[in-house]
Length: 478
Picture 1 (cartoon, helix red, strand yellow):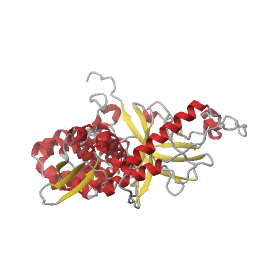
Picture 2 (spheres, rainbow, N blue to C red):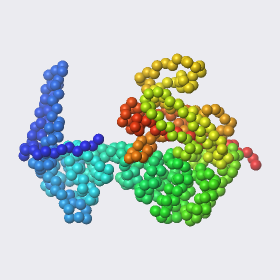
Picture 3 (tube, rainbow, N blue to C red):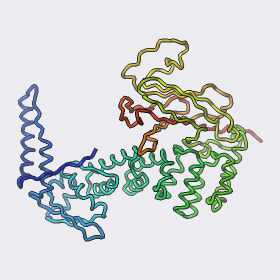
Picture 4 (cartoon, helix red, strand yellow):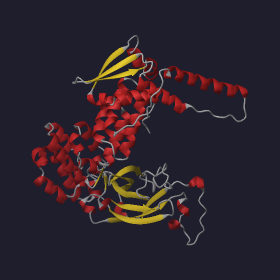
């Protein structure tokens, strides 16, 4: 965490006193090593050293260079009496810029000029406090003057606050793209994908660029109520952004129309302003969706490929595809539940259900030894070992059914976190299609800690999702 240090007045000779302290500490450590004492005594004057450095900045004692920082487009100029040696230690650019100069004028954007005092303070004491609105200007300054440690620190701050739902994900995404920060870009994109419903309902949605929108629409891990919600969010974006027809049509073609029930498709065709304007561009996709809903998936798969993205559900929160599960005090006992999902998104399968059994255990036990799966009632279970304390989640169908021929099931578990009254997705775990559990489920979680980032009021908020995946069959001659 980045924190701000507190500055107090110091003497005129603080600069040389600081260097003297460094030398004394070094020689004391060397003597202790030579003496070979069995139990040495630590003498720690690091806080005093930091205080002296802060005093140097505040008082300007022994300053040998003045930085005059002007906010672009204004007459506002702030002067900082600094020390060439200390600035050059952090930044090679400062070392070159301040060489043989006693005064330098720096022109910065207004937001960067407003936080320049924090930036300079970091160079003296290695600490500062970051607010959300200051993250980008501080990162800009650290990037411009090549202060790598501050760059990493602010980027870590941004990623942490994204995960908690506090950061402006859209603005930070566009900033990350402009600076080439791939790790931050991926963090923003992941947050937006997992919390698209919250973002689409906020003021940030109008600031989404066509490039970012295209990135989101192609993802299968979007968390939404259903595909219809995504269509309405896209239509709202089109109304605000008013992009060129080619951009609008490309975005509309990224909607997975087979995931929308026929009755809702009819309503969209009758009422949607976007489809009224760009209907011909997606006419083939709408026909494909109606054909998919009209036939049985097995019959449809004999003639058309159904393993493309158009036929793959995203992470839908609607009851047809999963269920929420709140586990109170999850570090205590094994828990179990069950829920039902629709066999598949096809209208032919709308009335067919599969029941799923779920077992959560806060500690490791082999599946074959758990009570739910034990062959004999009353079988003694081995004691759980401390090293086997990783939580596990097992999802299995209640019975095998011939109705599921040609379909496999992709399972996903979302873990929620609360921010400002909203429940956001903080983690998502996907199962391999052939597995009954996610191998990395809560692998880093500490469920014993009441303030764990995985818990909301000492409860684990999960949402279980089952996505049917169709397989194209061998085509037969007509």
